[in-house]
Amino acid sequence: MKNTNISFDIENIFMTNKTDIVLGLDEAGRGCLAGPVVAACVWINQELFPKELLVQINDSKKLSEIKRNKIFSELQKLDKSVFMFEYQEISSEIIDEINILQASLLAMGKAYQKLLPRLFNKPVISLVDGNQPPDIHPCQTIIAGDAKSYSIATASIIAKVKKDELLNKIAEKYPMYNFEKNKGYGTKSHLEALEKYGISPFHRKSYAPVKKYIK
Image (cartoon, rainbow, N blue to C red; front, side, top):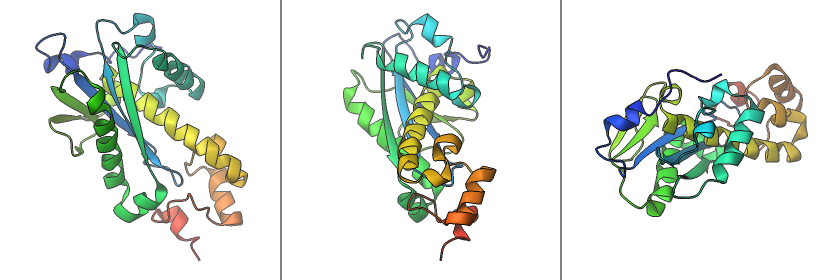
């Protein structure tokens, strides 16, 4: 079901002509007990972006895994004149060193820096989900931006897809934690596995549910 609140209205506030570049950024995985946090940075050409794909874009949390993967597959087929993105993961080790907020902001900043050289013009603004700005100038934080802005929502989908892909790979090495199902979140079966097997190298040792199993 289409989110009737989502639009390009926020992007258009900052655009004075159609060639102005507005970026959207979001992260996925802040609440996970294991694995990296991942951020994505996207640019959408409003004039050329396929309408049939646009109507499927929504806050990643409101989409099924199958739907997110299908949208991501379609996004990857788009020409760079229509759509561009970059993403960046920050490992659980760095999360434990600098805390999850700083790791999320670092991931956003790095994703932005990766996309910047590919753009044909300097962005007029970067729209960031949440209320904490990364080291990006100029930028505008938008609370619940992934439910309001197409650019942020698209970034949220990519960040979540890439984060889940990484957890699926970790699941192959550590099948006892069911990462392929819980995607690193603290589900009942995940907590039971921690109790039974202890922590893996990919668990976030600074998180309270994990910390108590450190020997």
